[in-house]
Amino acid sequence: MESKVHRPRVVIVTVPCPGHIIPSTQLAKYLLSMSIDVCCYSTGINYPTVENQLEEKFGDVRIRFRPLITNSEFVSPGKELTDNVSWMQGPSDGEMAVRLEEIVRNLTPPPVCIISDLLAGWSQDVADKFRIPRHVLYTMPASALLFSFACFPSLISPQVAPEHPPGTWNSMVVTTHAFYDYMMRNARRLQEASFILVNTFEDLEGRFLDLMRSEVIGKPNVQVQKILSIGPLIRSSNIEMVSAHSKPSAREEHESFAEVMHWLDAREQSSVLYVSFGSLLTVTETQIHELAHGLEICGRPFLWVYRVPNTPQILPADASTEDSLSEGLPPGKDFSAQIGGCVHVALRMEL
Image (cartoon, rainbow, N blue to C red; front, side):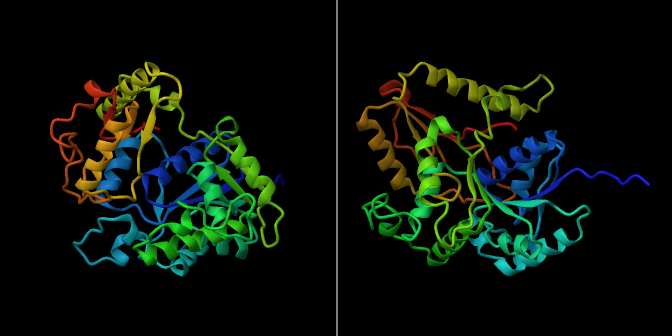
C-alpha cells in the first residue's frame, strides 16, 4: 500500500503586538505559498479591538493566529487590559509552554520546527522536548539584534561593544522592573535557537549581520547555527495590490501609502528622519511637544508616525480608532509649510 506523503508542517508562535503579528502573518503566507502547512498561534489576540482590526486587515487571508491563553483566563469578567506590558506579564512561561506542548503532541504529522518570536522564548522548552529545532523570527532590525547580544558580554567582545558605553542598554533607566526581567529572560534564550530569521536584507544591514555571524556563532553555550536575513517581509508590492473590491479601509490605507511615497520621492536621498516608537511606548503631551520642537529646530524633513499622547496601547472595545493630528501637537504648528515635515497618524499596510 502506497504511503501518503505529508507536506512539511511548521508551528509559528507570535505575540499580539502589530509589529510582531503582522510580519509573522506575512511569513506564514510565504510558507504556505511553498506548500508548507502552517499552524499559527499567539500568546493571545482576543482583545475586541485587536480582533476587529485583524479581521479588517486579514479578512481575505486564510490565516488566523489562535490564542494559546485567552484574556478570560486571567482577567476579571468585563475588564479589559489597556497595555501590552500587563498582558504579556499575565500568563507565565510555564502556562504557555504547557498549552503549546499539548498542541504539538496532537499534530499529525508532527511539525518539523517551531518558528517563534523573540518574546516567546519559553517555546524553546517545547522544541527541546520534541527534539525539533526552534527558529527565532526577529521582527526588528539587525542592529537591534546586535544590541540584544551586546547585553551579554560573553557573546560580544569588548573591542566590538565597549563595556557600558553611553546610551546603551546598561545605562538606560528602567522603571518597570518586571518588564525588564521579561525582556532579558527572552533575550537570553536567543542563544539556544537553531536559526535566527531577521526581518531585514543584506544591502541594508549586512555589516550588522556579518558582525553577529563572526562574533556570536561558535561561541561557547551558543547553539545558533545561522543568522539569516529574510526581509523585508512586508513589501511595497503587498501594499499596492489594492483592487476595487478591497475593503474601504484598505483603499484608504493605499491612498495614505501613496501619499507618503510621493512625499518621500520628492525629498533628497538620505535626508529624511523617520520617527516612530512602536506600540509599546505611550508618550505624554509634554514629550510630544518636546519632540515636535526638536524636529522643528533641526530643520530636516521627517516622517513621523504619530500617536495621540496618553493613548492606551490597547484601546477599549468602544473606543474610536480615528485619531486627529490636532490632538497633542503644539498649537499652530504647520510642519508641511515650515520645514517639509510629513506627519501621519499611522502608516498601516494591507497584507
